[in-house]
Image (tube, rainbow, N blue to C red):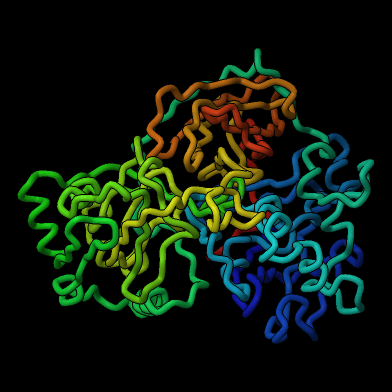
Length: 518
């Protein structure tokens, strides 16, 4: 029997309700408490999804866009279903769409916005929560919000944890690929994949990640105008002022429209793809994007004000006096980086969310250095580089420094079913913040061997858009494969933990057990 699932959204969780008259046998799924919310403190959530159990084999889900997903691989004697209970374990057993879940949580988890076709994982949650002092320990929070250990608990320990490993209570979503049967290992000499990359791939303005938890005056203005679909304000653009002060020979200010007209007349306006990645983007995360940026070079503006001999760094502000970034930037950090007063993205005015009417964009820096609603540049004699006296470091959990180079998969869902004998192209991005990514490596044997694919002479201002094409062998038949990927930076650093995605190769596309409806 095919089940149909529709998504209901409550205050703290995306709920998948099973619409069927068939009752599950006792013990096939955990009992669901419907009297109290295990998720939010305001108790507005009244139901959770029960994992779907199919005694005849792994559950196959057809997504709203038509793809087939099987998160538990096929195995002899149904070992993965009967013994490991794979379909009843891990985050996706109860939460069919983690992006929707996190957007509905309080506070809203903005780095998870369903962008780039990224498939969120528990590892991404751990990156922020267990490495960042401000985010709180993930284990403590997850156990609490699920009421684990109480009579109202909606989950059981084995659903989230794997007790079959030597280290004890590991997370099932992080160990399952080593526990599942039916995953074929392919060494590097047998992989026969093909690799391609470019740095020109761009996304729409709407796919630019935006944090919504700030509360400064212009932050609130942007978010409120975006939420209410307020048209862009032409008068605001026409009266917007840009000023430069501090260690300059001639402090100046201009109307933005006049500065643009002068720059266009001088032929100095630049349009180029540029990448922005959030400092706290987890490994494989989606808080990264590249768009075509049109703007005025910072060098041209600085020539007009003439820096003094003491000028060493600069900081920049929005009209509410809020400084962009946790520090300013030294001029000696700029060689090789594109620095623009940006007023168009993809040939259109900036959206409210992206800082209309203009922003200051510095290539090779994390996104918190992209000043939205840019209006003031202050030139200083101070050293503002990392490690300078009085300059704060990013928080301990941020990936700036500790997690670069970063990379992620795009548009391949965990367990996605692909065709045996037909080429399948994995797609993704890679970025190193302020270090270039010079190679990517791929493995299909659990990291025992790696295929290196070089990306020579990259531009640090742009991301790496990569494609790796693999053809599942007809000789192996119906089986699962796990592709791991990692990036290598020009300074020798390697992605701290490879990212992984499992696909199921089949000779015949199966009928779905569950059909997801939007």
